[in-house]
Amino acid sequence: MVDDPVGAIARNVPVLGVILVGGASRRYGQDKAMARLGGIPMVQRVAAQVAGQVSMLTASGTGRPGLDLPVIPDAVPHGGPLPALLSILTWADERKFEQVATFSCDTPFLPSDLVMRLRRALKPGCDCAVALHGGAAHPTCSLWKTTSLPKFRTAFESGTRSLHGALAHLKACSAEFSDSGDGPGGDPFFNINSQSDMAEAQAWIDRMSGASNVRTAGPMVCS
Image (cartoon, rainbow, N blue to C red; front, side):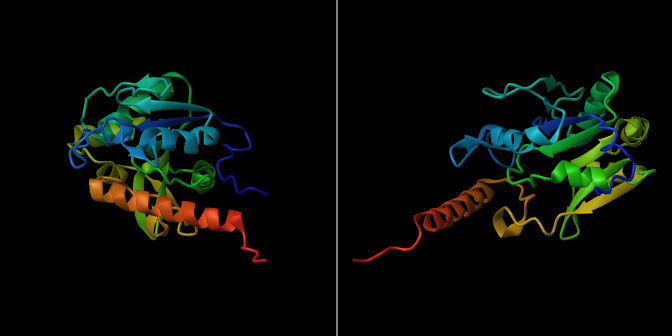
């Protein structure tokens, strides 16, 4: 039986999925959402990985070529993830979504069961469930209740601008993903912030592709 502490899975509560694409990509030097990893724009990799995990998938910030998703505009352009989340939760609440799953556009190795495990972790009384890997929190990859919107507004009005800072205003649960091994260094939340990160991610994909080809080819038979 699936652990479902708030009954959302059993009640088939719809989950709005949102890919965060509003960042300025300053450290990367160009629009990293459209940077190609294995020949595919990163944001499209993320979309393909998470689309089947949510009821509806959208993008936050601005649209991208080839990404056929509804766009939730940021009330504060390039204001960071907290103002973006305020816009997202407001948009979701107006459309009667109770839960919102967010995904960063620069984490292309996300677990295929990310949303399900976050839903299982969302205990009664919690405002959100945050993904952990090795004890490190990844708040851009989390599940949020739209009822937490007033607490986010309070955090923003107090001067908080980061999601890590906003968590201090919420009751947060967490889900540990240390058993998920995809991604460089076995980290499914490997974050591509720089060109060197991209090179490391591409090298990992090339290694995995090479290993897969060897397994597919099987042993050589010599006559």
